[in-house]
Image (cartoon, rainbow, N blue to C red):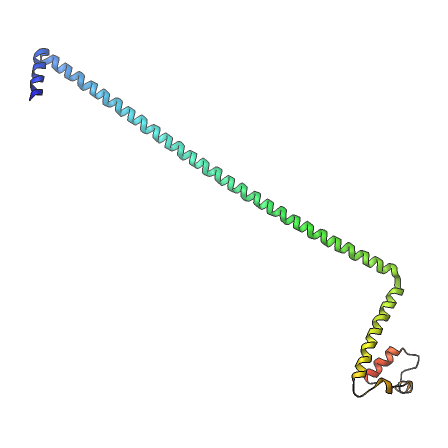
Length: 175
């Protein structure tokens, strides 16, 4: 109630038109204030949207950079693995080359020794096989080496000039 009395006193002093004019000014000032507040809020929202857009762009940019970095890391790892594989292959090839060089040296040494060395080796291998035949014949119950003589060999059709190795083989085979 006191407010109503204050308004009536105000109107009495200013007059009806003066009070309406003041009321209108207050209304316009209030609208301007609200409009300014609305503009401030809109600017603030726009800045937030721009910041969000920039943040979104920044996030997309960072995601892109992260993916590029991951691809680069994968590429570097693949290159490192390929280099390691190449090193292993080169090492294996060197080992193989060393092995073949060593084998060539051994073959060259063997060739230098000539056919005489080869003959002695074949004679050694024949002697070893002769020893095997002798043991087999000694172990067999039907034939004893001590019982054999040159006459029985000549009767079986082998010549006395034939090598003893061939004679023993023929005897072992039962001819």
